[in-house]
Amino acid sequence: MSLTHRFPDGFQWGTATSAYQIEGAVDADGRGASIWDTFCRAPGRVLGGDTGDVACDHYHRLEGDLDLMSRLGIQTYRFSVAWPRVIPKGRGPVSEAGLDFYRRLVDGLLERGIAPLVTLFHWDLPQALDDEGGWLSRDTVDAYVDYAALVAEALGDRVPSFTTFNEPWCSAFLGYASGDHAPGHTDAGEAFRVAHHLNLAHARAVSALRCVLPSSAAISLTLNVHQVYPASDDPADRRATEHVDLISNRIFLDPALGHGYPDALVDTTRTITDWSFVEAGDIGALHAPIDGLGINYYTSALIADPASPAGRQAHLAWPGTTKAVSLAPDGELTGIGWRITPGALTDLLRRIAADAPTMPLTIHENGAAYDVAVIDGLVDDTVRIRYLDAHLRALHDAITAGVDVRGYMLWSFLDNFEWAWGYSQRFGIVHVDFDTLARTPKASADWYAGVIAANGL
Ligand code: IFM
Image (cartoon, rainbow, N blue to C red; front, top):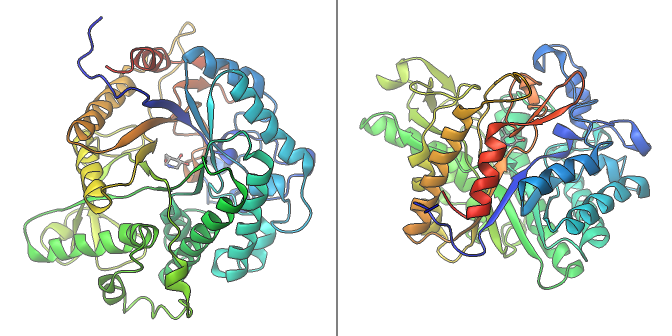
């Protein structure tokens, strides 16, 4: 079979998940509560009152899940460590049983020839730390750095790649500005303070990890850089788009790349925050060189000034600001209602490569939610295959244009707990029956196995 799109030799094909979304077993082996356990129990926060209590029960079904991954030919598996599983109160006593679960997971991957890629923080902050201020408190930065070093000490001899944070934008702006995510605050000023603490925690953790990990270890940060376009040529819409880029992208990208916070970010947020949470010495402390950036991409957005003609159409609020809105998604949408815009992935990767020409990039997440039923043991999710195929073509275009992309982690391996959407959105290439917990590989799983085997389309 001849390929139309061959990927570079050594390109890593993988899948991604996160702890709270799949593990379940929230009370097993002394695990502490996380802010998501609490959030799920607050009425009206999560669709259908769903919780991650059982999720995919991956904690108890580890071996079967790893066998399935191996059958698909997965080369890298990106998973997250649940902080409250290994340090139940966030700081202090360590749970060896919790660490053992991740040791078994890593060993199981290596036995099957799958490379582990560990995410240290995918949103499940220990509740005990939130009780003391959570990410609003600088003490949480210290606790995170100690936690990161602990995990690196436990797993670093066998794990080649670590990523410090998954989508810090979501933790800061969905957790503290829009309130859609735990802990559910709605104060834009808090979101900027949290963003700064997450940036500090990332940089300090990178330095701590370097002291523990072998020099061959690759350390990255995973960002959901928003690919945003002005909704029209109106200068007001262009300014609104720059504003969104500053408060959603450059607020994380610039410090991670060693540029501190741009003056334009401070200028554009004057009515929201005075940045007094930035203490002497912080700006220098924000930069610790990384070996790569993880990029999560699903969709793009059209941005408008709320008062412009475009902005007066149906729109959604943009978390953390009243100076910009995104137009209500239209055209072809995925099951969760996100626009399908593969070309925007090419644009995004080219933009990042222009900002950081020597930084290796890896797609840490890309995928689509579609609810396709199991019929006679088969799940014909051709719609997902179409989405994935189009995005892999767009990724290939970026590579052909010279962008250094080293791998692709499909989101997600299993259908799982989709945060405030509960179990209503299925991103997996493996179907999970949430009553019986039976796994059924979808047509997209077979298709992806073929892509991996061929290293191309
Ligand atoms: O499920 C999430 C994941 O936890 C983080 N990135 C986006 C995915 C889909 O919404």
